[in-house]
Amino acid sequence: MTTKNGQIRVCIDYRDLNNACPKDEFMLPIPEVMIDNTCRFKRMTFMDGFSGYNQIKMHPEDERHTSFRTPFGVYCYTVMPFGLKNAGATYQRAMMKIFQDMQHKTVECYVDDLAVKSKRKEDHLQDL
Image 1 (cartoon, helix red, strand yellow):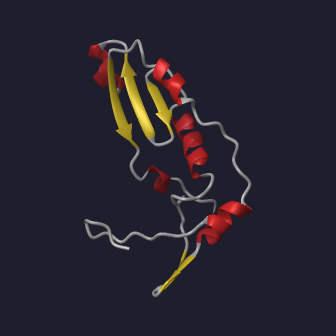
Image 2 (tube, rainbow, N blue to C red; image 1 turned 90 degrees about the vertical axis):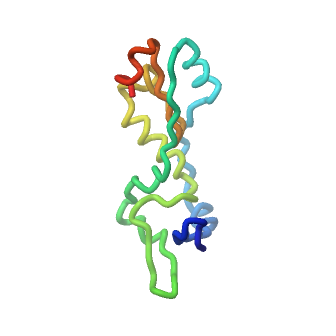
């Protein structure tokens, strides 16, 4: 499939793989709590981790499970593709680890959406 800007997009049906995999029970943040955690802040910047999933490496032994055929050969993902059952939980766990020192202080993250918040307007560039 080709996108509007001419890039090729590969769409793969992972239903069978997702059915065979156990669910990662990692808890996602509660959006209402995240909103409450931002109430007393003067400045906020919202960011989207566009294509963030594609920055998390697959375990080498699991790469073969993402294989797909094309007229040019058989390929597999070396980074986590969108559409896997546990992609959201895996990405959230990575974000929690990356931002652990800033979490609930100056950063709130929900999977690939980030909010950087500052109590004082003057501090916002530094917090970013």
